[in-house]
Length: 491
Image (cartoon, rainbow, N blue to C red; front, side):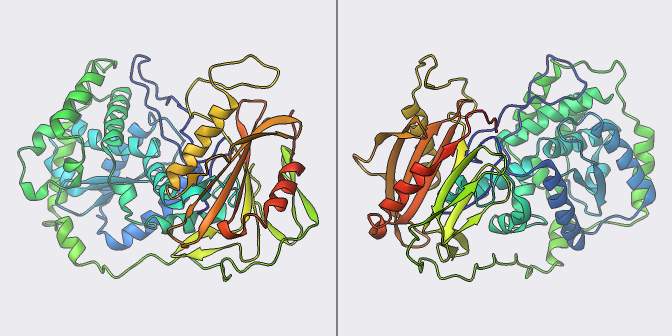
């Protein structure tokens, strides 16, 4: 099983809370909702800064004060209406002839020289920049990195090893999914995310004195240029006709300026300035001149021999969550991995280690909370409250379904489900087992869940090899019996 981090309000596998972006544009516009993200906005900035430094070692940045000032002026005008986190946006021009642009997390925006050379007015340049700003504001790069890590991390994504924050493990997580720099997760987005950036970009344009019609017209212009210049910005899904239609649809919902900015004269002056730098190479030519031998540093090993653990102590120590939300006992010879969030992972020496470049738990327990059914407005039965169509068992099943989605090798053991009393309240338990494809160990995973006052679940996940499950059953029982939940706490 693999570990990861999640937001304090829920594990990272849960769906994100829908957040409407603010941007000073018409209320009738489409509400664009960011996806869930295991990183904080500040970590977006840190990741973006590191990625930008790495990218600029590989890319020929155009050093021309007049061109830089022109692009920065447009970009900062748009950034005022970006919505989302208040990133300090930075804009750079790459001395490349093909038509491309990209956004790194935290507001680091790059525009190929070919965009400027093929634009017919300032609004077309602004359309490209607004699209990339939208990717940053919606945090698409770290959203994709979060999803990629969750997919690789498996069940351990539910653990509290990293607590409620990514913290100092940011580099390890990014290395797992491709590292910093020109990571494909930051450069190429899904059809859905590209559509979001188009819609949000159109909103930003209208709020900033431009017309989304210029974003649409740039697609028409691209259809006429040399095919060698049509790089990933044009090839992103959805196809250009679909993108144009969606932008036009959004345009009907927006308040456009009566006289949108186009400023053709200044754009022509900038094009003249670009010609003083001679012809630019294409991105493929630039890539051929860049060493491809640079790899991502490997994940560090814990130095332990996974699975070689001492017998669990019969005496328990008490772990208390820093916010006072709960306390739980654990074998006194086990180690607590706590970074201050809601969740915690506790395991013996040798119970956690690296296998195949991934962190695995072979022996240990995790405590955390989970918001069942993600964004669904449904709630479930709370003791002493009104009954709804969703029960505690339904909520527990949803958690187990998420576990199986991220760790498909696990199967629920028939007949293992049961109800019990946990800290004076009804709880449900179930066990799963299966051979972990990374460690090749047949593991037993027991999940015990109980309702919290706010409708979330608090759960204990207990992991051992299947062959040791009976030996550790008393330890599991003692640990679960020791759980003490603070009913008045709001996490």
